[in-house]
Length: 114
Image 1 (cartoon, rainbow, N blue to C red):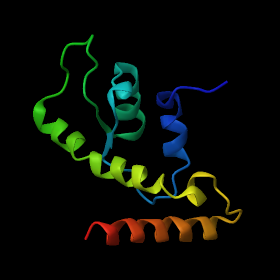
Image 2 (image 1 turned 135 degrees about the horizontal axis):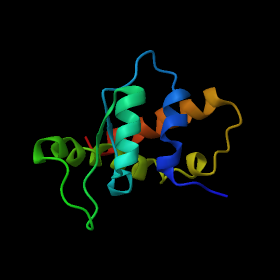
Image 3 (image 1 turned 90 degrees about the horizontal axis):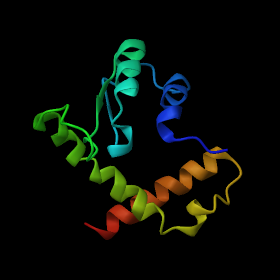
């Protein structure tokens, strides 16, 4: 049974290939959760930045949420990559080939908008 993404945050951070953990985690409204915020702060020393859901009182000021507003760059990149059927269907078996196709898709999208 699929689990909500907020339940997978700790597993994702534990399985990260980076040498150091990020200082901030930017998520959408679904990440607005006090228990998740506490777990990230206590276990990983990561600041959670997420806009408040409509049924909650504001817990963050506008300065932190400016980082969230710039998140659209990443979202647009994934939307542009969805145009390439080879990436969506994951035809590549080897991760090196798939990464090469992702890079090729990024270059093609970037060249289109220059």
